[in-house]
Image (cartoon, rainbow, N blue to C red; front, side, top):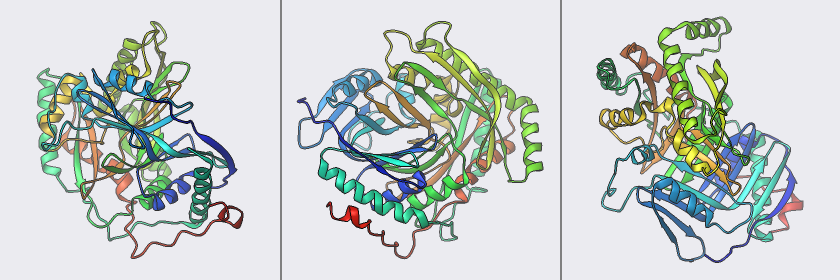
Length: 466
């Protein structure tokens, strides 16, 4: 692959809400995009300058501009790391997703052809043509050439005008039956899983149910409305590789820094939040006392520590925060944080692979849990309980667990949520837990308006540049 030019950059003032700005940018986007929020800052990426995808047979790198693609055979994540090493740009950052089905392949299962059209895509990342990094005060614009920067600055200015007064509201035209849809089938699946756990076949499994969304959904507006009502660890809005999604991730799967520090953040154990201080405090105290919830969390932390030990320097793995309550919108969870330092000779995608899928979305042991999930759930998970992530040329990775999200693919729109099943689980309580989680999204579904508001024009000092 011949060298490709790096980015040109420009920093401009950009006061205001980065999340609202990203949602407004999505309204006018015409191609693939990923918006990714982390610690109050938002990265907005659009256009596939280079795409890298993974199937069970390896990775494929596809440059823009008609240049030939490059195929890298091998184990999925090793091939993926090698394919990314072929990106000959300085300072690149990639954005995309890893589907839950990657877990089956990592455990040795195969999928074969998808509808006769080839092997299914397990991971899809793009090195964007244009990028905006928003911190609430300024924006760093990145593009392939100065003209691209001018266009990006124009779009950003228009998006900020829209964001300043945009107040999306949920409406009755969009509905999701989180209370009843699939409830009997879910209770039955939970009861069977409890029997398998009590028989010693596995220790824990997360089973989920899908709820269709009826009506025309405005995905950017839903993202903004949902984000204003949730306090996620990460949030995202994307259209990439056949998927559209908006989500409010309660936890990270893996974070790997440029200096090779690895972090994961398992959340397991749930109670509702109603917005009433006394009631929420009582539920918090109940959560901390509940033997089933505490056990479910403790075994998840134990497995996460074992997984970090596989790829980290001995004696660097530690639990920095154990079983504190984390508030995530309409629910609260028991949460812990574990860290370690990546061992010499290991690459960051090995750390991601050791922790993927998140134990809090799969089970213990993961191979047995994934096999049970495959048989018990009526359709593949796809993006649900996979990861939306960003990765850098410096080896860094930040991967958010895909939960509390709305999904759109192939003309369908739906929600999905699960609960952790252990030997002490009660099917009725686990069903109610899925309802509690689904409500954190279903209450904020925004219908498509009869006609979109026109995006306001940019200020005069920017308009003349295009």
